[in-house]
Image 1 (cartoon, rainbow, N blue to C red):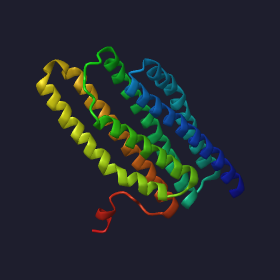
Image 2 (image 1 turned 90 degrees about the vertical axis):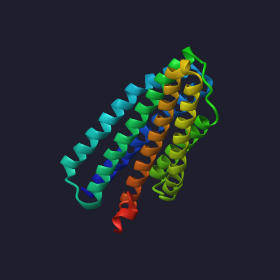
Image 3 (image 1 turned 120 degrees about the vertical axis):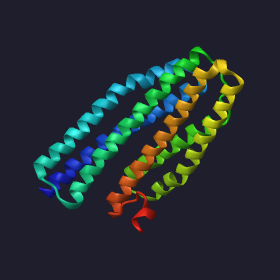
Image 4 (image 1 turned 30 degrees about the vertical axis):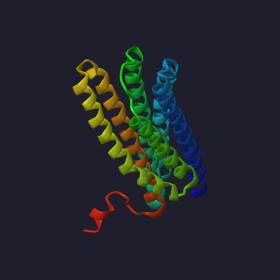
Length: 221
């Protein structure tokens, strides 16, 4: 029975990695849409959302099927729980890519705002964090998780700077308030994508080591 379970698990992992690659493509296309104000890229992201949602449902269903069929315990049960959590985080990344594109479509219609240099930094950090977390999953290598964690605070600080700078623009040019709020929202979406990459990395560490990587300082108190 153990052999059958692990064969089913490998199939499940490939489904998850396939979904991860689709979500990466959605993020890449949303960034290209933003950089180039390209409506064709936003259309690609929106068209991918349905497939990602179906993948999420299929992976969750397969997890429940394996639990019911094999009644796993210990590490095997932990593994399925973690796959389900990563599955959910990946779907949320896809949602954030769609949200970015919704705001990009408004910017395309009214390209009157200075983007500055902060948003380009944020988008590349978010993309890199997601890529490293997926690489950690694919290779079962927690060293990639460390690279994700190192970038979290940088991304958070950039988001705060973006908000401050954009509010300054609003004060100088009140007529661009609505568009400026879209820029702030896009920055927040990139920050949220970074958060999802951190979640995925923490789950991988928990599976590989049994250690909870969340709030390590608090756990020592």
